[in-house]
Image 1: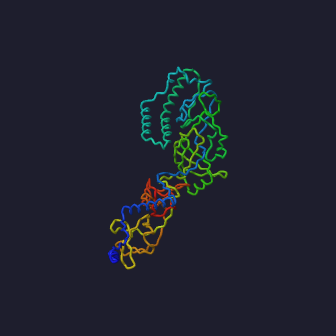
Image 2 (image 1 turned 90 degrees about the vertical axis):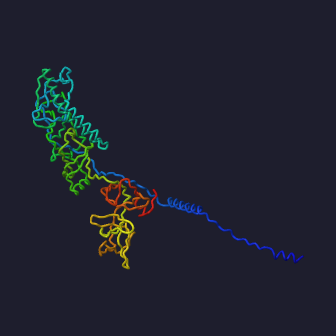
Image 3 (image 1 turned 45 degrees about the vertical axis):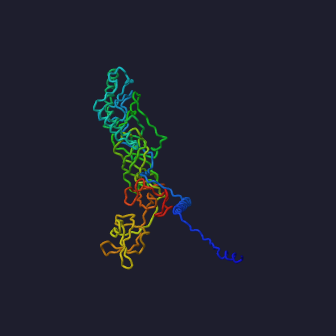
Length: 468
């Protein structure tokens, strides 16, 4: 019996346990890789410095100073030859010729508002004048620019000039008819010279560039008298002002810094803007020194009639006005590049990329692609210092001439991130203020309108990936 039991033991099967085979799922692996990448990206995004993006736009910078200027003209305050009531033949700012009736004097007032006058029914415009005014308005509407409001005043002055002759003629006819009808004895006074008639006087009519004083700029002491129709005057009183030249000047007291700038830059003409109507004009500039103060004398030869009633004008001296691409000052950085002659740039390899022919130590020649960041007028090409090492020997195409890499040149520029990584773009600065630069548009290897750049150029490095 015991033998049978031993036999069964000998026939028992020995079972060993093996580890199971691990089946790898490719989808799970890919998912894990993507998940890890996303985690690293998110952590990197929140842990790195915040990079602000700026969109490049066209703009301008105007550097100007505003002053209150004294207007000086060739003008005379014409006085009355007798006493009496004055009746004016001419409208304000009308142009008159020598011998033209300007005003009439009478011992008693003349009722120019008489309803019985045949000529008091109104002003009749001839068809040619009407057509001309309509064409001027149509031209203004077709060329309307909301950013150039000064053209409204130009249109107004042009139409006023067109109407003045007709109005003055009608006014003269009306006044003659009223005087004849009333039977009042009057004395008609004529213009002694060609000029423009104005009906304000202030005692400054004889002030010149040589005779003005600082007291003339004291607005608290300034007084102006408006001469009106039917007012009573005495002999010798001012009755009208006659301006006899289109040439006029504005004297402005300058601060020391502006005066120094104008002297240093030897400015002889300057663009100004008149605040009254936002009109921009060019003026000849001369500097006058008086009692320790420097004055700027702005000389004009047109548009005088627009300001014939003004003795003081607020004038902006436009010292700098540049247009181009507007970028923050903080975006601009300096970067060094290797400078090589343009003749050493060639194309090769499997594409049309720019590059240089590098001579190796064993004598072999290898084409190395390079990125160009600037080409100067002298023919120097700027290439990155990361693409080629200092001391490398390069060959001129189709020649045995060589050049050793070593000369460097510093460029000002910004980091363009249109492609998602930082690419250096050079800039040519035209002007600046405390916050922005205006840089030249249309430069090769530079910026374009609507480009995206890093607002603070010191926060990134070249070729760094930037998340917008």
